[in-house]
Image (cartoon, rainbow, N blue to C red; front, side, top):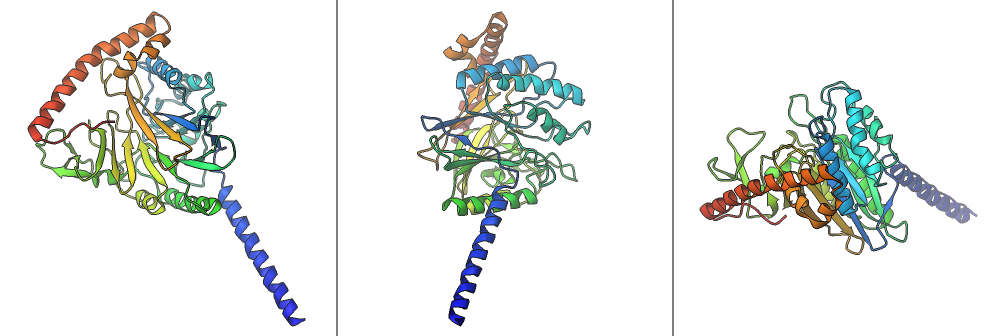
Length: 402
């Protein structure tokens, strides 16, 4: 009888532990910070259009949104990822108009949109990030999440991507609000509580699935580890740039790491490191961290198994930078979830594409594309000459394939 009773107690204890574990896992899974799952297409592919730093104002909103609309039509993305500094106007009412101009592009095409914020999106104090997120979430196409008081900032969440024919999770997209400024007026970075959330959620996902689920991360401000992945050089070195948080230090690409694209300005990372990159290298499920913030930088460096990648500002800027503004495309294949493909499209190259010329709707579009091609030719020629000179003079690679 005693043995039977002991066996019963053991069984009851096991059932209780299992139930508690299940409840804990469920609590982690249902934290309110996970968007509704998306799915790979019937061809097993998933395409992301990365748009950042649109900086919409009176002088560029019409041209910028038209270029973005044509990019959507040319690329046919499954998801648009917006990573901050989008419509930082002086008043809430003006910001609302700019958000509407941008979101109508995606709403009219029924393209899902995920949003997080940059340093300029609410810096003037006239409105909060939460108020701006509510503007985006007023559109049916937005899958963004306001994390409320759970985490620092607004716009930190997870987007699962399931298999094309089932609800099996095959890939994840981590979205982080990297903040604006710290108490010392430096650029901010992903905060400690956001890092803890990622670490715990990543471990729970691995436990739930019996394996790591590979992923990409998106945020506005680049991680401080970018300077560990570059090479410190003399200030007279061609195509080297000053470190944002250290006087007299200059950096360029290092031969020690795999590089992509080209540096056109200094990477402006956060001053203090709260452990985000360390957590991601430890968890080993993030393939790349995609950022904006540095408008003319379209480059990447593979460091400790993670690609640190910057995307171009996606806006029209009058007579400037038609070869240095544009967008990034990222493509996934559910059959190879440990890999991704990416390419940069600059407005100059975009305006020369046959399918884009065919998308031009009327005289205004054609004039816009013509202006981009005309100005871009001179900018590209000047850049090519400078790059060739630098590479000949230094014997080092300045510009890598994107």
